[in-house]
Amino acid sequence: MADNSEVEEIVAFVRDQRARVQTMRQWRRRLAAFGFAIDQTEAGLVIAKLPRHRVVCPVPQELIA
Image 1 (cartoon, rainbow, N blue to C red):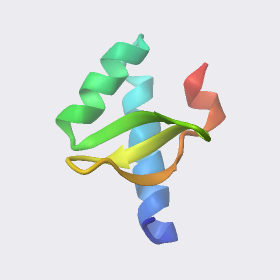
Image 2 (cartoon, helix red, strand yellow):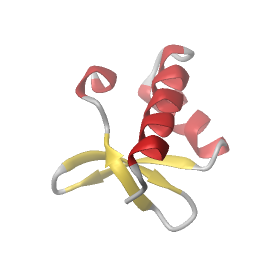
Image 3 (cartoon, rainbow, N blue to C red):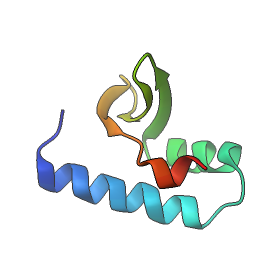
Image 4 (cartoon, one colour):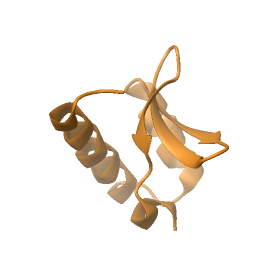
């Protein structure tokens, strides 16, 4: 996992990108263009860095709805 300041920056970026689109599909595609992914794990949805899908942190609940 990344350090706290990097995680906060990534979550803020992901939150901003979610606000710019209407669907989960558009959000995933937009994040992929910037080198991130939303992956499904046993623990739930997580933000991951591409290309190796390195888990950064869980997706905040308010972004999933």
